[in-house]
Amino acid sequence: MVVMLYFDYCKKENVFLSVFFHDVIIIVYFCTMKSPKEITVEQWLMRLTQELIDITPEEDNLPLHVIHDLINNKEIQAVQDYANKVSITRLNFNDHGPVHMRTVCHNALRMLKLLYTAGIPTSLQKEQVGTFDDSVTAVVLASFCHDFGMTIGRQDHELYSGILAYNIIDGILLKNLPDERDLMRRVVIRSTAMEGILGHMGTRKIHSIEAGIVLIADGCDMTKGRARVPIEIHSAPKMGDIHKYSANSIDRVLIQKGNDRPIQIVVQMSAEVGLFQIEEVLLPKINSSPAKEYIELYACVEGAEPKRYL
Image 1 (cartoon, helix red, strand yellow):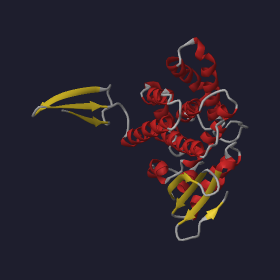
Image 2 (tube, rainbow, N blue to C red):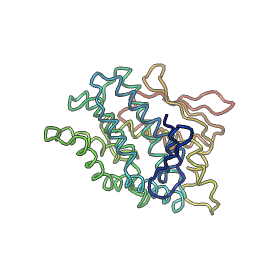
Image 3 (cartoon, rainbow, N blue to C red):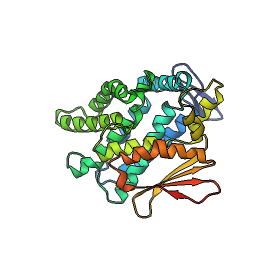
Image 4 (cartoon, rainbow, N blue to C red):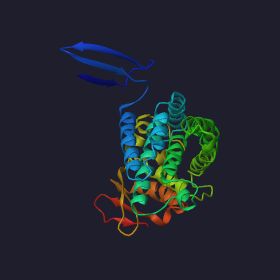
């Protein structure tokens, strides 16, 4: 019998220790630099990605292999960790690190699943240049890398994200699609992922459903857990404070099947200050997304009637 225990507080290289106890081999893994929340979201991602693969006739494992590579890439982990330090400590913004980028990925995959089960094709499917699994792969890559540019600063960070992510995305695709016959497929997936990264702020025109889903998924990560650390840091008032205080009133964001559209987003909040997150962050992103026509949006303030925006 083998029992595996994971500890994520070790800051050194990954190591493991085998202990024999009453004929049971206990393997203790010390993981590098990952919080319990990161590990939890990664488990959600792996399960959801497998579910998406299972519902497609191709059952192509490319998305699963790519997400595994993203999760275990040390450079990606370092970039995401530093992006978070810059965002929170230097800029006084909310979380833009590994938990956020994984959460955006999870949000995006949930939306893709709802579109697929509703019979809505992605842009790659509609244009007959790729499969649903290719779309999933592009969305996963974009979601995981979209805030790399926060290592440099807030202004134009989506452009810097594209610069920093390009070689990483190219390397992961080349590893998983190494054949010469896969050249066009790599180009299509990489280009779609780059569109998702460059378009995630809603300030640049995007055209694909895939990029539009990344845009909305980013806006949906607004719960109070994302603002916890910045609020705990005592500092003089700075630009960006409204983001952390408004996010702190958001209790939950539900992404579920809609009533008359495939995707319903319900934002539950404890106070009206949370409406800032909807009206100034999420709603503009939905309005500039090619996936807008598939979205229902509701705000639920505690003690008040739900408000429908879309």
